[in-house]
Image 1 (cartoon, helix red, strand yellow):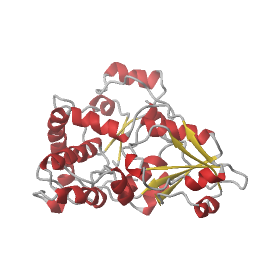
Image 2 (image 1 turned 180 degrees about the vertical axis):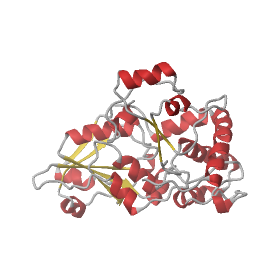
Image 3 (image 1 turned 90 degrees about the vertical axis):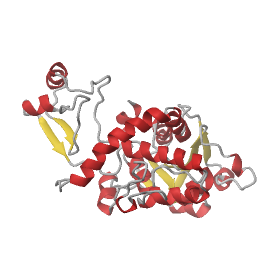
Image 4 (image 1 turned 90 degrees about the horizontal axis):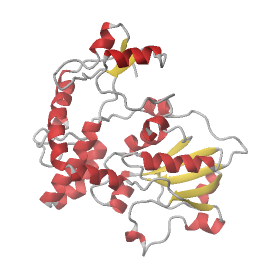
Length: 316
């Protein structure tokens, strides 16, 4: 609910919606929520019995299809996490060092039987996502801060964008008039969080953050250290971070990336509303490894079928 409600194109969220569109629920949407159309992407959505989940809406003439955003499905992202688990258990140092590059550039795993089409030998598909400048423009607010705006800066990996990220961004935005978010490069995240991270590449993470209604602008590939030059360039009033972050024990012997804003008296640490991190999400998947593996094998079969038989669909 927090995640969907924070998407800037969402006006309202209906809780406890059924997976299958029943006749009663469909007419509740039409009559109580004044909904005109029920929408889904151009990929098929089937119920366990193999029937179309949107058959009733289509029959009522109230269904519209839109082009799906390829390569950013939950099946795909869960697959990447499971790939990390598998490569870790095999203990291959080459795999450890190359996983981040695979996720960033859409290549198959070192053990892929079909590297050329992005599918790994174990059925796990890595990124099919193809970022374009137009896609970034679509997600952007398209306007900068005013001359007297109080600009708040927060940075991080923002990997597997989750409710914890949303809530800290909401608090950060409340401190000023314009929220600027720095998103670290894949290489920076990998060097600071481990060879298996990030799960999502820089462009995917950037669009995830830009989709949040509390964010005004992002720096794609922000520097690890917040410098005085950067603060001056962007006219930053506050540099903030949350209390809940990934483990940073490895930084104890290194300089603090927030040293400059601290010395300038513009650094603030905000109490994170939710005790959740990217690692929390990954641990949930790992804890149910076998169940997710079976789920993904089934889901990926339909995804593979979609990619092999897809045709051009107009629209953005």
